[in-house]
Image (tube, rainbow, N blue to C red; front, top):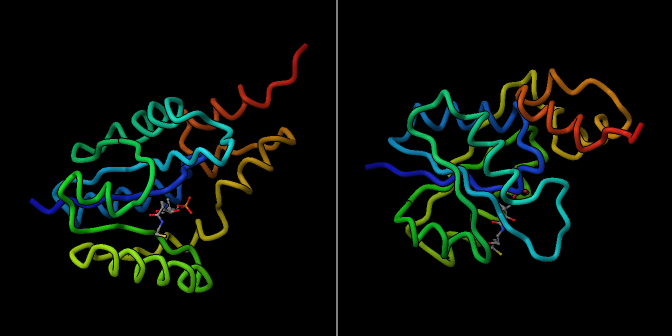
Amino acid sequence: MKLAVYPGSFDPFTNGHLEVVETAAKLFDKVVVAILVNPDKRPLFSTDERLSLIAAATHHIQNVTVDHFEGLLVDYVRKVGARVIVRGLREPADYENEVKLAHMNRSLEPSAITVFLPTHPGLSYVSSSLVKQVASYGGNVEPYVPTVIAKALRQKYQKPE
Ligand code: PNS
């Protein structure tokens, strides 16, 4: 079985991430969306919130599951028995950092091969940080994130009456 791990912070999960998952799900037998738990960062959405939001946003794709990990990605990849790491590329500049990450991961675990998937050109400017910025000023984020996540963002930034 070809198992792929799609790691990231996903704070929040965007339509760009969703498109990468949908494409990966067609290429591999099973895809695990793996949320990085970084104790040094204070994410907008807790790990549990991200787990349930991503599960809801990917509910329509049968061979996708959602999990979380702490520490080195290659340790997680080994633990679940995957050989493939999926990363999305939004623009050429992404490649520079991503290829360094891929080489380090391959050096740490030679069997872990990173596969890059270009995101849909129409979503190249959509990032989690910009989406949070738009939502924090009350802008409409419906075009950039799954509906369930747009709703969760509205709730996070709702001003008390
Ligand atoms: O999409 P993101 O949020 O930039 O994801 C980055 C991620 C989670 C893929 C990367 O930071 C990661 O794998 N972190 C875990 C620590 C690790 O294994 N780093 C790579 C080797 S130093």
